[in-house]
Image (cartoon, rainbow, N blue to C red; front, side, top):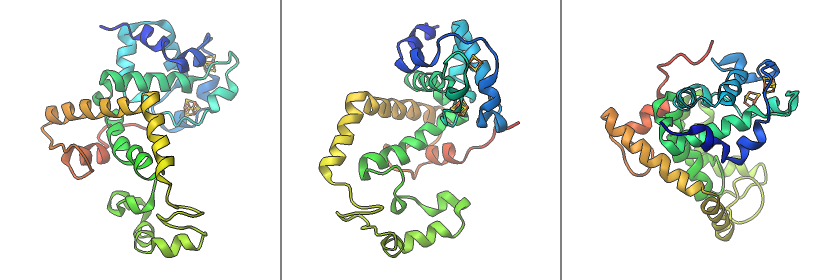
Length: 236
Ligand code: SF4
Ligand code: SF4
C-alpha cells in the first residue's frame, strides 16, 4: 500500500485546505451536494486527517469524492479556516494519477469529461462550444439544443456573436496564438500529463470490462458506458 497521506501533503491545495478540523459539521450543513448525494465533507476531512492510508485508499476508489460541486460554500463557513473542497480536489487528482478513479462509476466519468469539455478547451478555447455537442448525448435539453445546432449562426448573431470567426461576441474564434497559450499552460501545469494518465487508465479499464475503446472521439463502447452508466445509488 502507498503512503497516500504523504502524497496528498505534496499537493498545495491540500496544505491550504486542511489546517486542523474539529469535526463540527458546519461544512456539511452548508454543502449543497450533501443535500442530495450520499456525501459528507465533514467525514471526508475527518478520515483524511486521521492519516490512515487504508481508509484513504478506500476514499480514492469511492464514488464519494466525485460528488462535490466545487462551489466553495464550505470555505466561507469553516470556523477553523479549512476548505474541504480543496481537500477533495487533491483527493481527485491523486485518484486520477494512481488510476483509482476507474474503480467508481462517477470516477470513470472523468474520461468522458476529458474527451469532451477538456479537449474542447484546447481545440476551440471553450469548455462548451455548441457546434461540438451532439444533441443525442443531451436529451435532457429537449429539442432546443438540436435547434441551436441547426441554426447556430442565426442564434448567435442575435447576441452579437461571430461563430468560429475572428471578431467579438459569443463563440467567436479564439486566435491560434491564444489557444497555443492555453496548450502551453496545460503542459507547464501538468494538465497534459494528467490527460494522458486518464487515457491510459481508462484504456486499461475498458479492456478489463471487455468494451471497445478508441484512441480518440466519443464513438466507442467505453465512452458510451461511462457517459450513460447510472447503476449505483448516488443520492439519499
Ligand atoms: S467546518 Fe471545518 S472544522 Fe468543521 S467539520 Fe468542516 S472542515 Fe472540520
Ligand atoms: S465545495 Fe464541495 S464540499 Fe464544499 S460546499 Fe460546495 S459541494 Fe460541498
